[in-house]
Image (cartoon, rainbow, N blue to C red; front, side, top):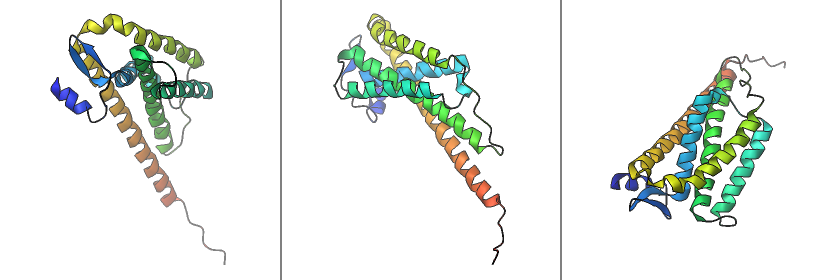
Length: 198
């Protein structure tokens, strides 16, 4: 318990933690939502096969932008309040972060290939799928109080799963960016030089 609290103290202020069976979770309510959102989105991307896709279409970008603005306003205490709202803001942020880390990594991997291919297309109903995710995340935030007594170890394990998912997404995105930069440099070095006309 103390080990997790010490580890997460480097990335979370640990104010307003959820208390389960008399013990505080190792992160605040918003970070709990962040890691839970990342874990749930990672599982959803794997189960749906969408983890292979690149960047989504513009309408999804607009939905994600609206979610991040709402989460930012919640973080600044302009709107909302209370544990359910803090968890929901974290869920939205974790969802968007995971979605974009994986999508960006796939997008950059496409550009790193010798022959640049288009991103695999997103399903035509992607906006509807995203719209369906939002109520599900809101219900998860509101319903959390019903399942809060599931046990400290279970929820802490879920936090660790979310942190691992975000870390893996970051590593994948950085690796893809490095591969893309290397491919750009390689293509630049392999480009034939033309002799001066003069």
